[in-house]
Length: 547
Image 1 (cartoon, rainbow, N blue to C red):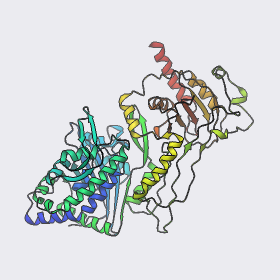
Image 2 (image 1 turned 45 degrees about the vertical axis):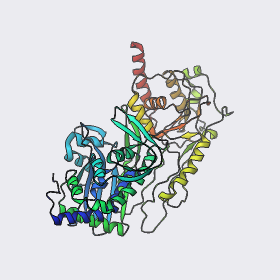
Image 3 (image 1 turned 180 degrees about the horizontal axis):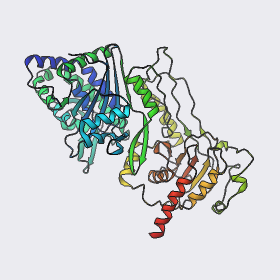
Image 4 (image 1 turned 90 degrees about the vertical axis):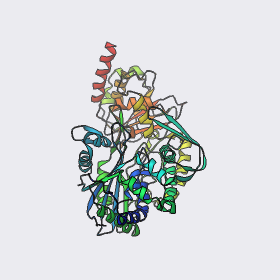
């Protein structure tokens, strides 16, 4: 491990100064990758100090950039980037990896990727990321994330207009935020509080906006004469904060490569695609491997492939992705419109209303029939369809979101967020004995295979659930089983999802307190019949018998 700033001479100090100035664009660019990710837990110091690197060109190499919080008893990598340098084509590729991404770590099994550093240091983290992306990693840059506070203090603080009062206390997490609204100069401590605050109505989106404002003001401060006069102190601080196996001359070369890439608009950036998942009572970011492979080819390796946009049932907003990389033919990318579920009327003439007792008997006509199953059209989820849209600019995202939020308000629905899943995972044992008394669940067959709804309903009844009816869904083209939470009972929906082996990405949440139903289960093609349920039922009955 090399500390690449050692006893800086006047020549090296001057070179470092120009590296800082020349990489200010890079600083904002890399940080932006983290700002748009809802899974980033704190300010990306990687970007701040990565702008202090190096004259020897590095081409065709992949660099692992990660941040470590040295204030913790157990160090974990909180921010992870992979940067590809292509000097020949004047391009840079940047891929950010959410710290909660579930991967296989040698010797530890499947867990969060940020645990790799704690288990085996740089070598194990490098090996884990390389295996995950199927990509060789040639160098690394390690950053002490706790250095952001001192960095801001060294440059004399950052002047910022705080738009709202920010107050939050988490004694267990040793997080205390107390910032009044108004124009002020944020010290290092206050800057960290400002960048970590996420407890307003906008959650991560609000935090992203605040981080963007901070970066703008920080960039101005770095360019100021006051900061230039403090260059020696800045260099000394960075020398204790940034560690790498890259040489100083290579760092300067990287700075020039970023400058060229930005000049030619040849910088591509992306985040590992995926969805929220719950496993063993813990929440993770489950990567979409097929989409990830395409992104790695396009963003890091420079192959012009169209990146697929996968619509998730939990996302009720239209796709507002940043413009995707275009092919040489400049074809427009067609994002998907999110799936939505329509609430059926309280009673439907064609629906099969059954008493609980009828579920105890097999119905030959229902389980074995020569007649084709007919879907119930009014119970349909609107299918995903394509529309031509113009690429969404960041400045226009709010307008698009406003339209979507209006639609969501009319339908009285919302997403199941990572924050909700994590809170339940932290406070509730979803693997404990299942208790579903007084919950009303309807079961819909979305596969077209006769008898699935009834057989499933019969087993669910034995868990104490009320099953007022089972029926066919609006169509039989559901690839995934979907759980609809009509009343926003997140704790129960996650417990039920655990029982049914449904991931959070396939949970749709409404807030309709007056609806007689609590949940709707739509059986999809991925449903493994009732084998899994019967295994859970045996455990449930055993626990109940001996409790």
